[in-house]
Length: 285
Image (cartoon, rainbow, N blue to C red; front, top):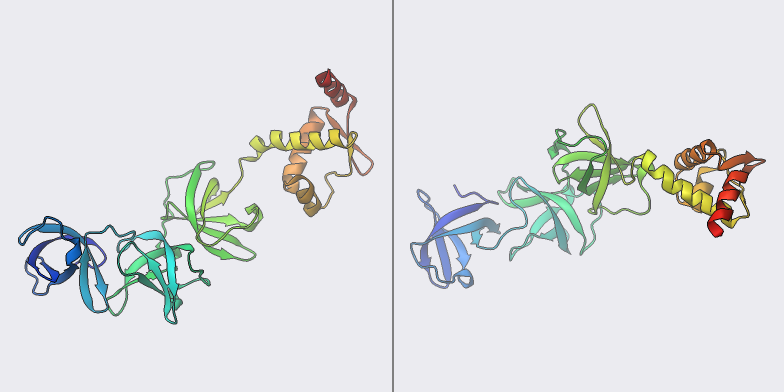
């Protein structure tokens, strides 16, 4: 049996208007376009990828972007009444049926898919990959990883296939800005769960962010005559809009500045201390 969706070395049996290939103990031939022949001759073995065009087994020397049982990020070339056709690097696109899609697709966008053989013995793609991902990753807390967003659930977050093989998730509270299905991301491992799944974050660990966040707050204080109408009870959305940081990050930064005696709480906000003003005057000189 020929290995559909994989590479094999087949023997050239005939070269005419098309090329007929065959492997030992097989009765049927596999066809290949004659344009792919360079200096090969009958009797030579060629390394080819096996796919099907309708019910005909075909072979190509081209390198497929995906192989059977593997995942890859492929581009949508066309959308029809039966599903989407994705570019796998061959002369024929592979079908991603509607029932195997987890979201409405956009032509020209790339999505993470898995290659399988359907009930009709044809190559097909699916976006339903969660149960195919491993929870046995080699990563630990604070490692940086790369992956592809394969699903987005409102109110929950984004699901990521790290290295296109390990299960991970970005909680909705960790998402800054707009993310898209199929987008490649680089994240930090915030936590390795007991079940092996990874919780991810776009940001650095909190202690590394404190200094940068504190600098942002100090700069705003200096530009506002030493007082800002923000404190640890200020609404999180207002903090986000003004400083582009979460309320928890704001509170950590304020805590550091309080500890260093650079700011103090005053009425409904915070203000620079005399120490901070003195340091600022020295820098201006």
